[in-house]
Image (cartoon, rainbow, N blue to C red; front, side, top):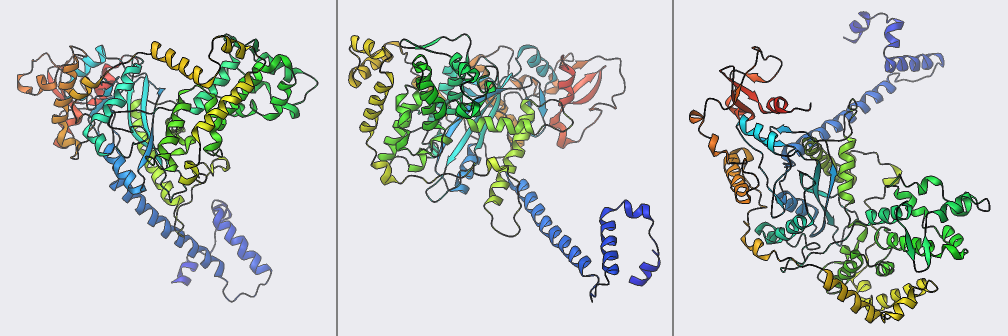
Length: 624
């Protein structure tokens, strides 16, 4: 058979060989073997090894493809707008064998556009209504074309996307920081208030589902009295500290000393110093670059501090940048031990008090030592998923932003990808998939050694605070600040604490939401175990009753008005057009029953048609 094949292919043209580089390489190799008169009993050894290698790799690849397909089919990664995925979170934590987590919430601007999601039979992109701060899921679901037009005419589109991320805290025997979990995502407008956010977090502790997994979110919800523990995002705090210094409108003073960006410009422009001396460039202090995190490290270098210290007129700027460095050391630097995070206590930020509270909880054995990995307690998990989702824009797309619908679809892919990557990064078998990682990010998920319980127990909290107080006094010496505090009798640690408490107590407002929380439905956050398609009607009725109770908009009536199609007014869902053929759009005469939920039943020129709900969105959208 081999001879007959060769005889039928006596010669190959040069053009054919050039079109196939692999074949050309093999021919050149065989020519070299022939020219060198290599005595090789198996002249086909290279080709055999080559084919065997390809075969083995393809076999491994098929195994991995089967694994990926199985993972996709068995995973419950579907993400629906305004749905809190507590069931998936519970399973995720069981698989990771972790018990504690840190929750974060953040928002980003998005493209204002309404799209239909056929998998959930919902319209995504409207501003989600809130019930005691909690987003109402399944709200924008309807089988009436008229109701869709009503929503377009009376409801605002989402200008922001709000996400909730859960960062697992590693257990005692784990050294890898797990990837964060997307708990919920939904569109909002700019009318959300601080009280809405507080009620959202408070109400979550009252639900039966949160009580079920209360131990998982112990870092956020610590007691049955609904005590909440907040930490400000350290990266945002650092950039805000930098931007305040670079602001052209803010005038900062510390005692009789000014804090000014002009001091840094003078150092850069001074011929006495070179870049080697201070490490700064003008781009590092560019006010327009508000998210330049790398410049924060340059602004807190010891070399720059040495130059500022030698000038008596720049002591205010020096102290300001020294406090800047303390923020980085206390909350961002991974290498800082918990005892060395003492600089946090020179700050009056809310994070300093809650860092102290975390240490006390660990000392009281209410939390594990792993909960003191402060650098993971931030909203950077939210920022990361925003960046990654924008990076998934198609190569032919000039728009790097996304709609609510785009985010939900891409976030599902990211969840599966992170799951696959984590499994294979920890898989030491021969058949594992290899993911390329930039050298700057190779150690992102590697946690430094956790301090033992004994090391945390040895921390004398009162001594740390007293030491921080005396360091603050030393920093302020010579700036006329201490004289003012002494004149007001608030120079000592105890009198200044009493003064601050009195000021906060007199200027703060208390809100009691306990009566509202006791009346909330315990099922507000619950996720149905049954298939969504089987419960569409029930969920829709529940959500509409909630909206009616809120009296959000008189136009948001229940879909019950449209349930009985035979009794609908003939003028409803009526569309007049000069077009008679609809071959270029999803407008059909008949549809199959299993996709009926994705279509509106409408009358076009007095003829009954079925219009796809995404086509209906296009029809009623005025902008594009």
